[in-house]
Image 1 (cartoon, one colour):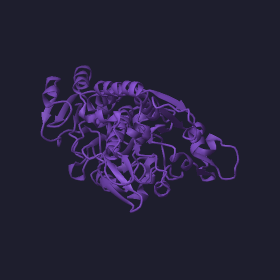
Image 2 (tube, helix red, strand yellow):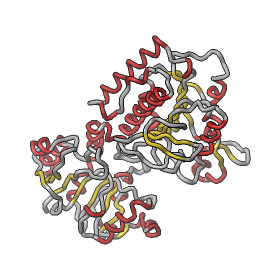
Image 3 (cartoon, rainbow, N blue to C red):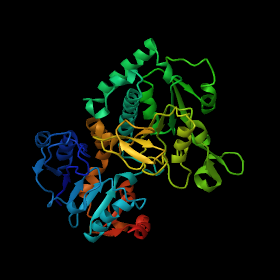
Image 4 (cartoon, one colour):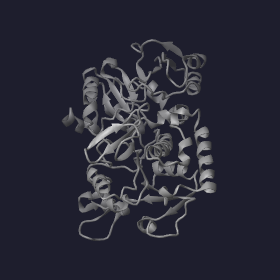
Length: 434
């Protein structure tokens, strides 16, 4: 059986430059497994056509004859072809309305769909993701946006030297700039208008840890949410440090009946809880939203919260880095995911309007939804490393069989949403969204 796969050119966003398989990984796949690789011609991909050709790939102008296609983001309906095996982030598992036409078209074309997001181990932990590079880029962007916002407000600040992540040639280059900003803060101190400078980070998983990694390139002092509430009332805070606060579930929610907070109850019975995060908002300068949220829970920051801050003249909060980027989700004012070349907007709570850029009245929000593509080289290498063990089994698989007998590794079988145009058992629920 011929084993042949393809690598598509990402065309959902103008500045999407990532790939699922790099030239180095492609060379190993060809050499170790005898798999042929077709690479769709691209002028913008982070790795050039020549690099893939030198690795032994075939550069093609369409993938019509390629049976298995690896991508990153959603595929436009017009690009889908009959009977293909597609592997990409489909963003359909929550019944996302904007992607239902794509899913329906794949059903009509008898396609197979494997979604990276659902490739998990026996404990349902994701095995393949861009998460780390997303949050690193997102936190750098948040601090860059903060510098721009302060400039608009007429406040000279050390973050003015920071640029948007994608403008750096590497993560290391951006980190070196941040370290110099940190040295400036330690020697010169922060402007009086900014102190105490407080940054809140929601969550404590990998996304939160990535945000804290970037923050900790600067001089930071970790305080508790309780200490945050009293910090600005005291005269002991320093202008040569950034106060970092990490929020866990017990800080952002409480039982409605006043009972003891039990984490498992919060996950299993969210209707018993109500949000309490609003008490902290007026004490934060920057908020990095790095935690999971769905509509079973109260929002972290509502438009009403921002409106009340604005009307009471207590608006210390200048920037929200919505790194989780869930439009109309945990941060209600995030009305849309933004693109790399237009990444930030200001939410005006008085008029309930959004204006792109860093000027205007309100709170600035950074909500780029393809953050890893701001570090496309490092992100693609890390992603391909995780994907490598599964490429040969996918390439060797006979998809013309039933679900029970299909020869795929268990993590991949769990992520198989469509088999020959039919929703597999775990994804039958998606019918109600089509």
